[in-house]
Image 1 (cartoon, helix red, strand yellow):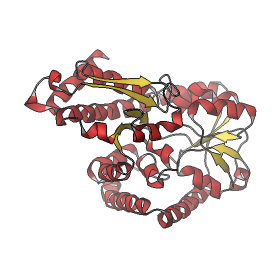
Image 2 (image 1 turned 180 degrees about the horizontal axis):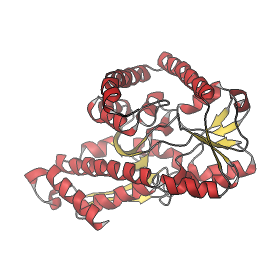
Image 3 (image 1 turned 30 degrees about the vertical axis):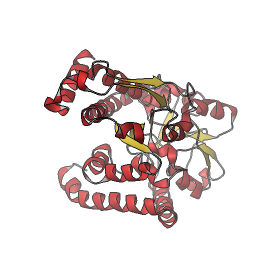
Length: 347
């Protein structure tokens, strides 16, 4: 870990250039509310790594204090807290804020969307970050892409799902725009924070849930209640996590301090995707040892899900000009990217 932090420190010093040592940075002593508990693999731990590295790279000048969900504000209220300035920062993912603006979900995870490398290419060089700045700016928030994780699982079910009809009438926890897809197939969905899912599943308040990837889902114990685990995660082929910052606070920082935040976030992206890919095989093996049956969706069910997704896209475009703008940008980038993807990658 020391070697990694040292490497990040070198990168950060390059990013801030010859303007001076870390002591020249703005003094930052902020709370960072979190949607995820700090003990939760990747989803929470990456927020803590971010906090620790910002402190180390800046020589203690940037102190971004990771606050557990509920310590300052509840997990799903961090958006409003950052927007109002009640807290200066938060660790989350834009997919939770569909109720604020559905276009924000497109900066988190896209059903039948891009893998991590393509997604980041759009965010960094295809106009994604600029559009995210525009949408969030209306709420007084600056958001930095600060982690990305590998594909998620599609969900945990108490009963085996053999057809689209088997989904009808189920009550399921679901995230982001994927929830609207499931609704079209007859599923009643609700959004629950991570810590609330297991009790709901255990008590039968919900029949099924999706949350994350095997190494993360394992920690939350879903396998104790639901034994059927489905792949691929059509709704989240990759997921971007964010550092949300009150825009007035962000704008007041000098360029060197902003560069440290941006550089450490970039390093966190690398750390997160590498860790996420590395820890899945062992988790899958352990889940199977616990009696979990691993399933893959049939082509027919995936086709039904994709058809429902395209209906959702058209509905969101009709309802939200921001969604149109972001969707068209992402779609145009992906269409151009196909030329490279088809030539450069093994199928």
